[in-house]
Amino acid sequence: MVQTSSQLFRTTLIATAFVFGASGAIADPYVGIQYKSLKGERSTLDYSTNQVNALFGYEFLKSDGLSHSVEYAGPISSSNGQIGKYNVETTVFSVGYKLIYNGWYGRIAYAKLDRDDRDLELTSDRALGMSLGYEFEIKPNVSLHLSYDILRNSNLKLSGFSIGSVFRF
Image 1 (cartoon, rainbow, N blue to C red):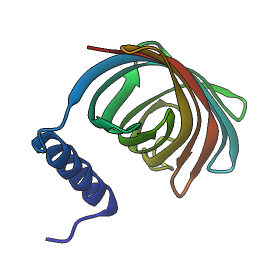
Image 2 (image 1 turned 180 degrees about the vertical axis):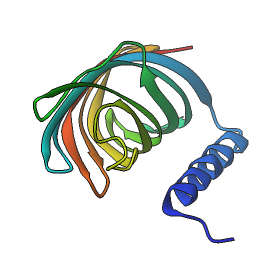
Image 3 (image 1 turned 45 degrees about the horizontal axis):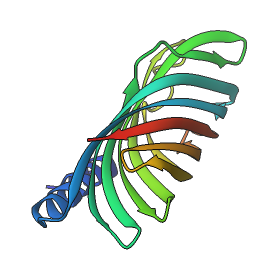
């Protein structure tokens, strides 16, 4: 069976979670909240969207300042969006892998856009998401983060920022 790139990415993400989870390493679940704002271009039109997300994750291998996590981000509020002159609602769901070293992190994600707009049939609703950021630990179980985010596919080129907090159990 030949896998598409999105199926391969999902399979890799699940395998990564399994390997880190089966390693017996120290692991902590976490939840969080995040504000994300993205701007750029979709098809040939200017595009922007922002939303408030809930974060759910599981962090592995916390030692010597290094940790890995698998994370889900999804909307908990309606988004505000604009494509060209049209108001649109676009929500972005993502599942990703995050590598953190001494607070600095990189995240790669598989993202799905759920849109209510006129060019839904013209563009793909799946994209690659990438983030570079810093997570500042306030207490051992509470941290704040700020990141630069990119969302890309063949018709979508967005970038922006996110800011939020994470609470570990």
